[in-house]
Length: 176
Ligand SMILES: [Zn+2]
Ligand SMILES: [Zn+2]
Image (cartoon, rainbow, N blue to C red; front, side, top):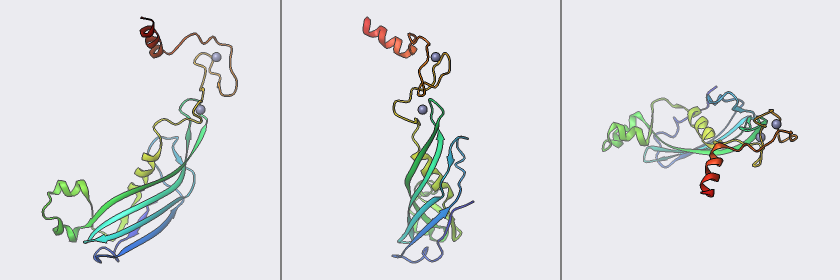
């Protein structure tokens, strides 16, 4: 499924703006298998034509369901994020004659069809809004490395005198 807006009304009308209110049920994040969109996506987009360059601003709201990195319990992440892009239609590229092709590609998204696909921007903004470390709770205790007990549910009888080797080095440094 793609998320598209039609830019025919605005692409050559300097000074005008257009807004779009889109909703889509599903989006594949094309990331990890346990990263799923579990709420229809709400997407608001505003496009302004400033000198035949289109300034696009979007807002995305949804929910991602995934698993805790430590205990693998389900974690629901409410997502509210946004994206910003500068677009230029191929017929207006002459306006940027002072820039090289690479400079244009770095700063602008060049398009040549009236139907503009926002899917990649929406996907990217969601991925960027997901924290690198996902925990069900700040103090999630994860699994016992010896017996596999989920330590959030109950403790186990394994001795816990073994410490993280990185911490052991720190402890040694402190002693010395
Ligand atoms: Zn957890
Ligand atoms: Zn244990």
